[in-house]
Length: 254
Image (cartoon, one colour):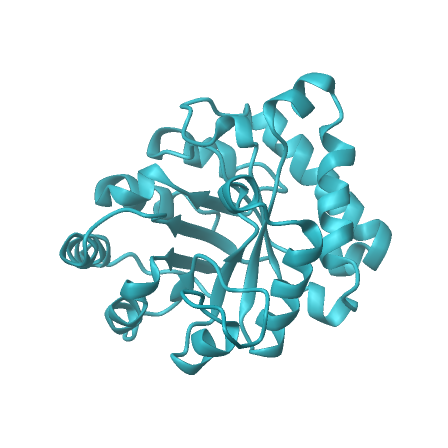
């Protein structure tokens, strides 16, 4: 069975003390995850060591960075490399979130470099893809997301790509309160898996976890996650509320 994953993306929110309390509250629920389930906390850079320490004794609870730079090292003041993340035992990194693409002009080619550097440093990328509203309204979303996969991932061999986590984000549903219907989410996830299968074969495609990332909340998580090709969620705002994220973790398929 593919990994079923609840990934929290805190974005640029919470003080250190607030983040520590949020983690304490979520972990206090003592949710036992099966071998096929993961809870991942993608936290701001200053909180990575604290979060790693918080989850160190937990089974299948992990920490993720929200980004890394697309160069190995050098005179890039303020940036953080994949090698740095590896050196503090961070095993996951969000790559290509729609906000990074939109506000920081990250290209598919740049994201391919980030993916390569993560894999070289034994970090699993959580690779984000998804379409803006104008693309959805034009009905060209399938081609749009296929290009994102092809230009950032398809240079990889099957034994590398199978370990990557993909997060589908309908950009028009992030932070807007709008959510793709369960049918829309399943349709796109199935399409993404078919694109992967065409390149790598159905066996490899069937091993890749594809998360939904668009206004996932406690009251819609179970329905979304029940879809056969939806393997959990990349959760923004609801991950900042302990009671919400606890219920989202509990909504994972078992």
